[in-house]
Length: 385
Image (cartoon, rainbow, N blue to C red; front, side):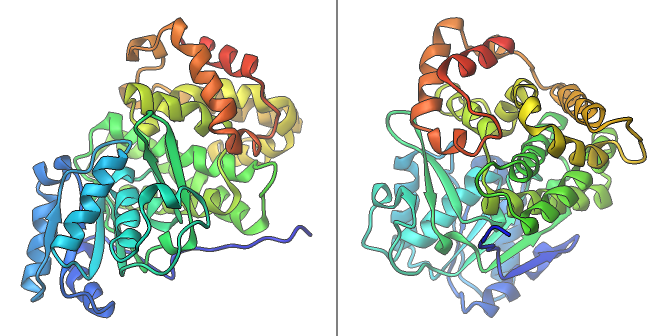
C-alpha cells in the first residue's frame, strides 16, 4: 500500500443558520478583535453586515476588509495584511467564495510573520504559525475552507500557489442560508468546480490515496444529486446544505491527492481573462476528461455510479463513457457559456496559454492520468474555442 498523509481542518460545523454561532466560535479560539476578509459582493447582499452584527452582539470588536478581488492579486493580499496589522486583528474570518477564503488564509499567516508573500510561494515555504482562522464559505464550490492551499495572481498575471499546513483553518463553518440567492450561473459554476476537485483527486496519478477516494466519491455523489434540485429551486436549503458538504468533501479529496489538467488549463483563463474559476473548469473539463479516457477508464467507471445511480453498464468501458458523457452535458448548466470565444479568447491566445500550462503549471500536468504535451493543450483549447 502506498504511503500517504491526510490532513484536514480540526473542526467542521455544518448547520443551517450556523452563522449565529460566529461570536461564540471566536471566543472558543480566544479571538476578541476579528477581521472579516470578504468581497464587495458579500457586502452588497448583506451577508457581511449579518456577520458583523453577530460579532458585535457577542461583545467583540470586529473590523471588515471588503476589497477582495477575484483571482486575488498580490497587491490586494498585501493591502489586506497591512489592514489586519493596522486594526490589530487577533483572528481572521474568511467570508465568501474561494477568493475571499484564499485571501483570508494568507492574511492569517502573514499578519504576524516577517515573510513577504512572494517568499511563501511553493510548498512548505512558510515559517511559524498564524492567527486563529475561521472559514465561512458562501458558495458550494472551492472547498477552500478545508484546504492548505491558497492561489494568488502575481503582477505577470500568473497563478502562484502557497501550499503549507498552516493554512488549514481552526474551524470551517458551513451555513446553507448563506448560499441562498446565489444566481444559477454561479451555483452551477462553483458546483462543477467542486465536482472536478473530486474527479481529479480520485484519478490523481501521483497522490491518489484511499481516504481521499472515499471523500471524492461521496462529495461527487452529493453534488450530482443536489445541483439539479438547487437549479430548479434555489431556496431548497436541504439541497444547498448537501452541496456545501459535497464541496467540502471534494476539497478534502483534492488537497490530499491533487488536482490535475482541468485545473491547469483553467488557470490561464482566470488570470488572463478574468473568467471565474468554476466557469473556467466547466469549459475545459469535457475535452480533458475525454482526452484522459484511455488512461482513466477504470477509474471513471468507478465514478459513474456517483453521477448515474442505479444504472447498470455492460462493461467498465461503457460505464466510463457514460460518465464522461454525463459530465460533458453539465458544462452549460445554469446558463454557463461553453465556448472560449464568447469570453474574449482568440486563437492567437492559445499557444501562450498552453506554454503557461506546460511550464508554470507543470505540477498539475504531472498528476494528470495521461501525459500531456504543449500540442495536446493547444488542441484541447481549440475544441472549446
